[in-house]
Length: 249
Image (cartoon, rainbow, N blue to C red; front, side, top):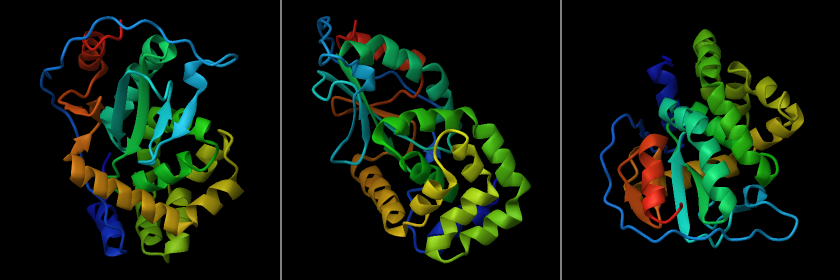
């Protein structure tokens, strides 16, 4: 997965200040206060907690009980292999076993690493809020193919990064096959192009990423916060025992 350094730096040259975070690869054990087991909280009539999605004031996408006693926040990058791994082996179990009970909520926030990451972030946010996480998970599941397209079309990718703002992210998406990728998953080409042409919204994603990353000292992805406490773990195998210790069991 070797995208050219010139492309990775191009967004900064074009005026978008991105927090170029690392994709975390190490972790330590976190000290988390123990809590008593928390009983399941019924969802509203006719709903399941895993179908309840809201956009938070921090512009994260929260799935589950918005008043859950255990609040998990994940800062993630769409071009981070460790985030893709968590999406594959952690996110399904997290939602099925813990979010579904109403005891845990999961909020996904962007920590943008590069222009391709920002392009995918804009696309997964393009439709209805409930579609964001499924689209993000599908993009992570296809991360190798997306990188292969980017590397095969390096010249087109670098040229796209130099286009005027309202054309830049459409060009990046075309060069990496993302227009067709998302069209096959319910986001029409017209919708995608409209969202990718809205430079003000895209710049806002990047600006929030940089601000929150700086304020919360988030330097790698995935980074998790549990009830406001930053965790020094980045895998499901390490995260699940922490959730259980906090009462999700």
